[in-house]
Image (cartoon, rainbow, N blue to C red; front, side):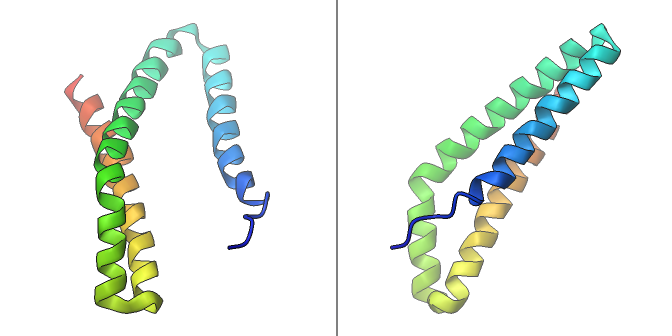
Length: 102
């Protein structure tokens, strides 16, 4: 197995930088922005925790099943799509739902 490239850290670091910079700019423009940002951050943390609770026991089972049923050439992309869907459902859908209840 090969060592992952350090360049893989660039996208994650960029996403964090965008969030920190956006928060900094928004809160500098208006002190009243802290509350909505804190609520949104809390909703996202809850959504990520729920995603982890779902993913930790199921990811290996789904991956093995997809590889067995679809083979490696199709199973791997299907698994990546599944991981992307988890992010969409949990980090976008649940966060949106939590914030919609407020």
